[in-house]
Length: 160
Image 1 (cartoon, helix red, strand yellow):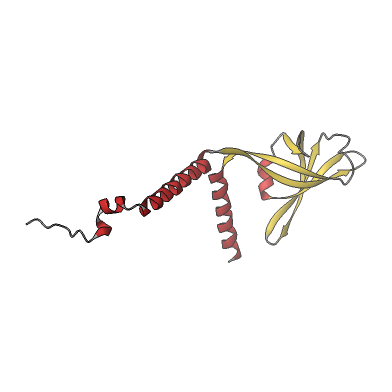
Image 2 (image 1 turned 180 degrees about the vertical axis):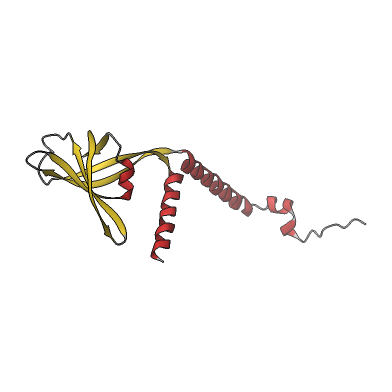
């Protein structure tokens, strides 16, 4: 025996839903939101940009040499084999002379690092403060988001 559905049940009937004019607005907004979210996801996965870490240091002049003194955390030590750093928005050839000592602040380890660089005469003034940028390479937004989420989870576990 064949059972026909009641025509009163309009919510399960596709023809009635498609013919209703107010639903066109809802469907168009939903498609715009879906396309927009897909575009944003594609941008986060495939758009690459250069990421820089910025550190602040000061110039120290002695009788025999001048160097830049930095107080950095563990993340700087993975860049210690670099041949250049960006100092005040100019690329400079540098090398780490020595890592002097370490100390703890709020259970986080920091290092005192001496960097020997060829600096311009206008910058090379005793106790002047410099911004040092380290190029971390090309990354995507997805990589940055996951790194920050992992760091937040790790910091939350340490606090508890």
